[in-house]
Length: 108
Image (cartoon, rainbow, N blue to C red; front, side, top):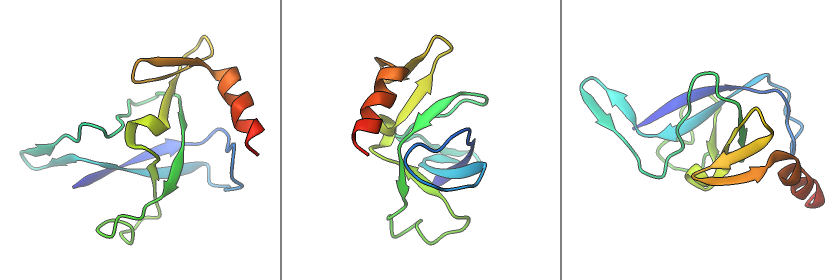
């Protein structure tokens, strides 16, 4: 069971994709009265600003299911919520966004 989350893209940092939105497939979801919560799966809030580390879906049960989609690398570890004061937060860890972006540029 999974759910697809549409993420509107402001900027791509490590790829040259052009779509203004991407679909992120997240494990878990609700069908009828049954809900499956997956402990390590990232959660998303409407209007939330995020920095995501995405990869191709290699799960044999979902990779070929349309629409074209990505998965978050490392489950919740690949999703950072961005704060208005310039920080990136993931599961209690807070990093200065500017510092994170510098580190990402070093690995180019």
